Length: 270
Image (cartoon, rainbow, N blue to C red; front, side):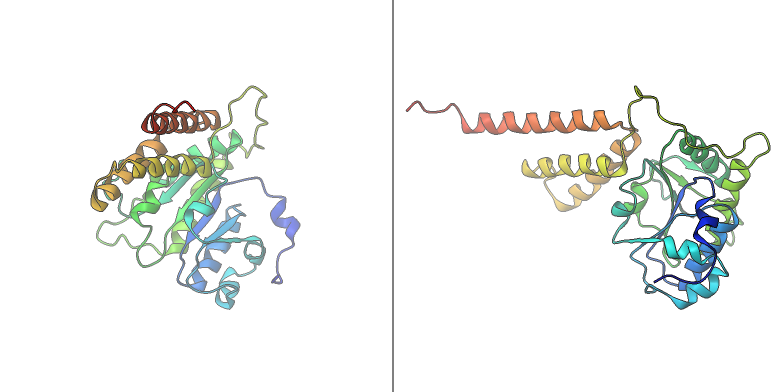
């Protein structure tokens, strides 16, 4: 369904920027207000993960206040893994870092790093959780860094659209600084090693966990959950390239194949 509003060309003419990802949003008004904040600050790509408010949503259209082309172009995904599959780097916003072993930065630092990555041709995502609970620990584990805004500790509650606006403002300030205008993504040199996408990293983790399950490495369900989180943090922190992912999956495959061959024993001569 297409909505009446700004022309597509108005949005497509804007320089590239990070993708905004809203997870399990509960109120249509917040999606519309987030779209409005995005267009205020030159962000144009919006993804929704399992929206709880239903879509299309009339309240979102009203709150967008003319930024309906952002809503027209948005994509919907069943989960955060699918929504970030084609991205190379993600920042997840949270009010509580929760002792996760992840870098924690403020909006300005995240915007500076995002600009550098976008300039290098990387795809970057800014991830926001639902209004009531925020992102889960498992969703935060998928991020490369956590973003926490410095606010009054006695009242640290930010509306979802306000968080998008703060991050968009930080991006716009950094990307449109007088001495650093928004660049076009650099064409990667032919010899440059491509960075792994989130889908490739998730595939490596899934492959490794599957084989660990096959040898009963985890022993118990509780141990399995905690160790998978630890392994996920280790893998996400690494900053893999695509060839490295392929190499590691090849190593796992050959180790497993060798083990199974030994278990079968030597072939019996006929």
